[in-house]
Amino acid sequence: MAVAFAPGKCILFGEHAVVYGHPAVAVALDQGVHVSLEQSDEWLIEGSPFIPDQHPHISHILHDLFKYESHPLSIKIKSELFSAAGLGSSAALSVAFGAALQTYLRNDEELDVIKLAKMGHSAEAISQEGRASPTDTAASALGGCIVVSGKEVDGTINIFHSILKTPEGERKWSINKVNIQNKSNDIYLILGFTGDASPTGKMVSGVSNLLISNPNKFQEMEAIASITTTGLTALSIGNFEAVGIAMDACHAKLQELEVSTPSLDRLVDAARPYSLGAKMTGAGGGGCMVALSRNPQRVAEEIEIAGGSPLISKLGSKGVCIVK
Image (cartoon, rainbow, N blue to C red; front, side, top):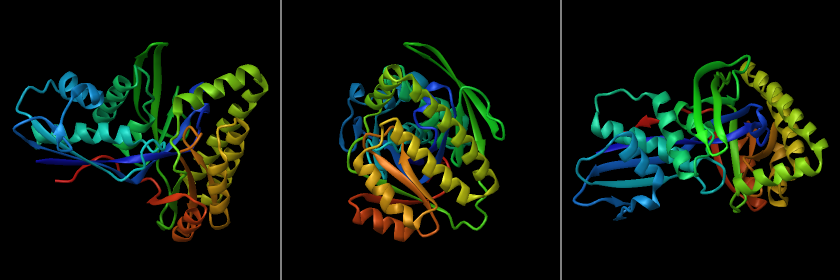
């Protein structure tokens, strides 16, 4: 048997602006996806027959990347993440499955996290009709704080570059990392799930239409990019009060882009009195918000009172790993 774990992620800065070439900042979460593999008499996933067409990302990793032709496997998946909430659960599954399969086949081989990030990105693209950002899979594989942009970002450490041929043409990204200065380990992220799925494609399309109808809204993209730079600088020196201020400012700009919702705003407002900052995270239209706080239990309670489901995580958790 081989068991691997890969974390989910949340976006701290850069939602939607990343679509227009600006950087996005993602951090790995404590919570994620466990995948276990063991030999079986038949192909199974969660105890049911494994149908490849229903699991294109797993099939791609198995057959296209690993060229697997051995005996059937029983695949078991345990997720600690809210589904369709913008926390990268699909990417975490792809990365964890790749790590588990590598260990199952070559258990003496050390995990290559960059290879797993690229493998997961390829699998996500297969399952998303050729379109996928490397943000989720990079954060899940590498852990910590990841910055994804169309070019290298000043003040970050470049890890690798990624290229994907999409229906719209070739896309290129630079995947970079920032070392977070959280020496006292007293800073936490508190996620609040609204209970509503986040329709990423619909929200991205809606922002595009908004910019076409109102070109002045492009200034919000520039503002988010500036906020992202400020937030990154604050993260790198451990000025979490400034990180929180940047989060609040980013949420205001995302409201201007009409991607927040009353339920997201309600959870953000509930968290702010006990947080350094709070904002929606991800595409919006539902999904999650995130708060930065030294009082995570109180923030989680306030989120729950306001109708959300909370998760508490350290800031910038570890990446993919083998459990046993």
